[in-house]
Image (cartoon, rainbow, N blue to C red; front, side):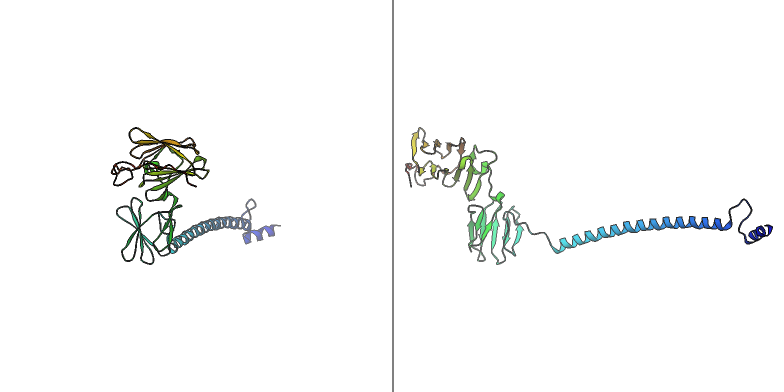
Length: 286
C-alpha cells in the first residue's frame, strides 16, 4: 500500500491525500476552456448571422434601386389619361403643358384648360372635348381626358342651387351637362345663353330669352314686365322666369330650384344686330 502511494506521488497523480488528483484537475480545466471556446463560437455565429441579414437587406435595396433605374416612372400626362407612345411632355411657364407627339404634332393645354392642336406646318386647331371627355385630333386620333379635367365647379358652370354632391361636366368649350336626381338632365350653352332640360319621358325643354321651346311637349309662355318671360312646361311641370338679361330661374319638377347665369355680353341677349329679343318659339315637335 505504501508502494502504491509512493508511485502515485512519483507520477504526480495527487499532491496529497486531501487534494483532487492532478488528472481530475486537468480535466476540469479543459472543460472550463471548452465552455469558454463554445461561448466565443456562439457569439461569432450570432455576429455572422446578423452580418448576413444586413448584407441581404443591402442587396435587396440595391436590387430595388436598380429596378427603379431600369424602369423609370411613366410620365405624367395630366390632364389626359394616356398619350400615344413616344409622346414627350413639357410644363410651360404660364402653367400650361405641351405634348409633343412622336410624329411631330403637338397638343397644348392652356392654364385655363383650353386645348389646341398644333400641326407640323404650324396650323392651330382648337380642340373641344366631346361627351365622356373624348378629344379628337385633326388626324382622327382620340385622346381621353381624366374625369377631373372635365369636372366643373358650380360657379364656373354658372348654376346656383345644385346639390353639393353633384358637379357639372364640361362637354365642350362653353358647354356643360349636369345629371340631376330623378333622371333629369340639364345642359347649359354659355355662348348661346340657353339651357335645355332633358326629362325622363324623353321630352326636352329649351330655355333662353330669345328661344323658349318644347320638344315633345307644350310650353306656356307669358310676358313679364321689364322684358322678362315666364314659362310653364305643361307635361313635365317645370316652370320659372327668364330675366331680360338671360338669367334663368327654374323650379324643376324634381324639387330643385336653379338659377342659371350667363357671362355678360353686349346686351343683345343672343340676337346680334337687334336691340330687342325676337319672338319666342313655342311649339311641339315629334
